[in-house]
Each structure stands twice: as C-alpha cells, then as structure tokens.
Length: 149
Ligand SMILES: [Zn+2]
Ligand SMILES: [Zn+2]
Image 1 (cartoon, rainbow, N blue to C red):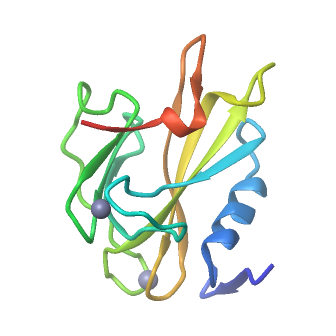
Image 2 (image 1 turned 90 degrees about the horizontal axis):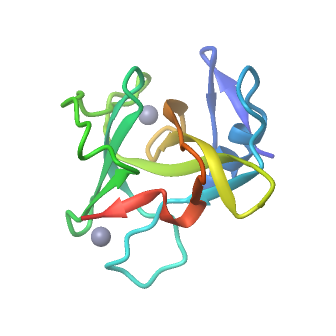
Image 3 (image 1 turned 135 degrees about the horizontal axis):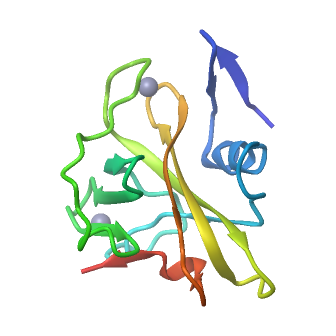
C-alpha cells in the first residue's frame, strides 16, 4: 500500500489506495465492498476522472465525467439536490478526481445498506471522504448506487 501522509493529509498513488483508505476508515459502519466509479459512455477498465459536487450534511453527490460530461447521481440525490459547491483539492486546489464508493453490506454481500463516497485528487493524490448516505431497506446493489439520468 502506497499510502503516505503529506502535510497531515493522506495521499495516494493509485485508485487502489483509495480503496485501502476506505477499508481503513473508523467511526463508521465497516466497509465490506468498494466500487470504482466509471462512466458508461466509455469502454474502459480504468478509473474515470470526474468533477464532483457533494454535500456531506445532506448525503447528496453528483459526478460529471471529465471526458464526456455525463452526470451520475448518488442514489436519489437528484430529487434532494442542495446545490453544493464543486469539490476542489484542499492541497493543490484543482478539481478533477477519481471516485470510489465504499459500502457496508447486510446479510447479502452484494447489497449495500450504507455508502460512503471518497475522492482522490488526480494531481497530488490527496484522498478525502466527501459524503455518505444510508440506503433504506432493502438496500441497493453497489453497482446501482450511482445513477445516470
Ligand atoms: Zn464519460
Ligand atoms: Zn490535489
């Protein structure tokens, strides 16, 4: 794991470090599964770069693909949208991120009942947790947590 701390903030060299960072989170439901956000408009196994808007207090988030502009919402964020500011890296101030979801799962390991959204700055590698949301029963399959309108 290439996680290191620079100026007191965790940084990482690849999207797998964001996955590791999520698994190491404390003070929240244990992360049982992770999902790297991708854009359905591109056939790629690589992580995709996004602009991200998120509101930690409201549990809403929206990702916008840097390449094609397609938007994805965190579950029902579109209906509860609170017009949060766009995320920008607290260390280098640019605003393009890789995005990973971390989920707590219930009896069915494929179904999430709580999801946290983390970003990694594609420039300097700083990782941040932006928001989280409880998914009421029966929960949601992790790959359906991000919705394309
Ligand atoms: Zn795209
Ligand atoms: Zn940065």
